[in-house]
Image 1 (cartoon, rainbow, N blue to C red):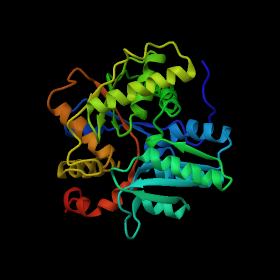
Image 2 (image 1 turned 90 degrees about the horizontal axis):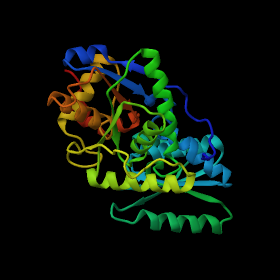
Image 3 (image 1 turned 45 degrees about the vertical axis):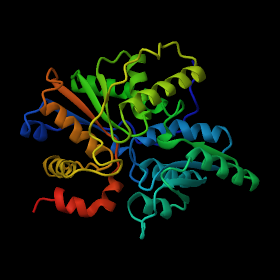
Image 4 (image 1 turned 180 degrees about the vertical axis):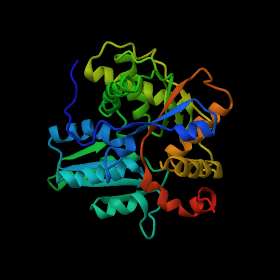
Length: 330
């Protein structure tokens, strides 16, 4: 089995941190945070692990322009733009929704590092825009490389396939055998990589993903399709049709990028108790979902539970009003 080209972008390994105070305060199993929010400062988060392979492939293909897509406050788009600037490449971001005026959060970073942006209506076909921009850049003598939303495809899966090896070392160093690992899922690539890595490295920890948009059926279908593309491209003999894909639905709330007061309250609680900051789009929503599941008595067999902190701190700032209202202790 061959693997795609890789470039080193993330500061690895990231720490595995036990939330002793938070776990005790809420009478929960020991909760550990895998701090992938610390992969970098400007390009921080889980996307960096995936982009090591995706941009590695782009450079191998001779790319001069990276084109990708996401919401206006996309962490992935921001990380792609930052890394493109670091590598001397151009970047073009296709962002769903209306631009902030003034730019804030991730959008502000996008503009600061010089990314070109195209804002589209939510129902516009992203693939159509990818095609239009690719033709435009080729006509200008550039070599574009299109990265899917979240870098979630058969190439990006390698980021979290490799992360499982790091997790196994973390668990050995801490002398723990976590029963469950929770993470947010918004495009499926992190969940898919973890599931493949678990099977390839015989990890016993069960992978559970809380969707922050769409629904369980969508993510099961998307991740399974990515598995098939991965197997076709890289030739592994795993039975990808039977790998378990565990999606916990029911915590999307008002919609993608929109959080309930309870999510903001959990963000504030964790920040005051452990000094760890979540965001209301991905990690805050998923962590709130995990806590609710535990309070319902689900996963009561667990002694140790890992939560993958995928970053997203820049997404806090455009939602400062809700944070001040629900998360900040007065």
